[in-house]
Image (cartoon, rainbow, N blue to C red; front, side, top):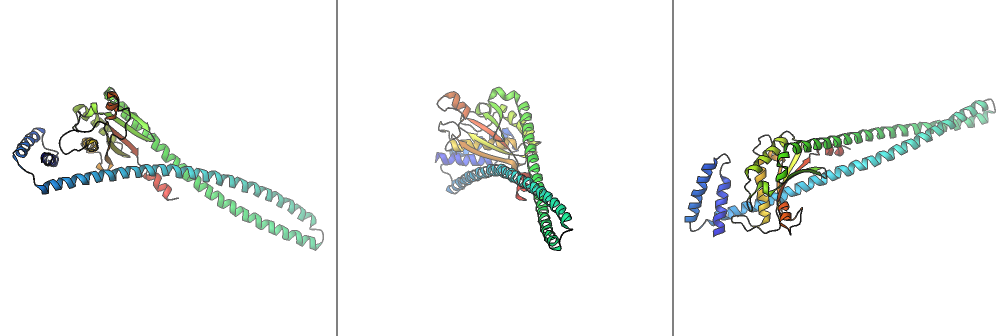
Amino acid sequence: MTLQYFIKFDAIILSLNNNTKPIVMKKISLVLLAIISLSSCVSSKKYQELDDKYIKLRSENVELKEQLDTLANKSLKCQADLDNLKTQYAGMKTRYETLDKLYKVKENAYKKLQASYDALSQSSSQTLAYEAEKNRKLLKELEKKQKELAKERAELDARSQKINQLENLLHQKDEKLQNLKASLTRALTGFKNQGLKVEERNGKIYISMENKLLFDSGSWHIKQNGRNAIKTIANILSVNPDVEIMIEGHTDNVPYHGKGALVDNWDLSVKRATSVVRQLMKNKHIDPKRLIPAGRSKYLPVADNSTPEGRAKNRRIEVILTPKLDEIMNLLNNN
């Protein structure tokens, strides 16, 4: 029954208006605690509603993870398609050069035949007819080759143009990513010695913040200095709308033993990621559709969990910025 009390209390607190003042929140929380402590039982219906809500949230988290994996696969497919187009372009170019050389050989042969024809035109009518027929066949062959060359050239030009467009889009994406990284690095310099770092990996920007900047042990409430860092990040992301924002919560391998609705490190990592999402949403210029919270629990460590220092590095929030690939996907789909 104790777990049910805390679950009900947590659900009531989360349902309060975000605009409620902290002092009023505190008073309401104390009153609710007093009511819960005097109650002898909790409605099984309300408990079931909270349990269903919790299962729904976990299911949504899994769906969001699948969406992220889909975006990563799309990015890999874009690169593979670009490589394939480059290979096709090289093959078309080689074929064009071969046909062009063949055309020149045939053209020279035609000139020689034309000269022979002129010389033999004074000979017998049988020889003249033979050479004339030969010339007509050669002319037809040349016309055919010219049409093939024109078609090959058109296809080559079209593929060349598409490759140039793709390369320009990728270059623009990389340039925007570098500019965004530079802006974040400059703006977050003051937090560098507090467990925050900005780096680029696999075409994405990772902003990693250790828990010493954001949370107390076992808590998902963001500390003031952490809120300042997130506010700085939000200000920059609000003027860079062309990136998706994934917020991942990570823990060490020490099991969660806190009280309340949370069960384990999975719950804690998701809760912390959601707290950062809510903090980012305080910037009204950030579209909530760009935000994807996810919990990773203990399964993606960056350091050895056997030491206190390693565990401290593993307890972190990572804000992962991924460029949108809509333009590239549209260009490839119109192939």
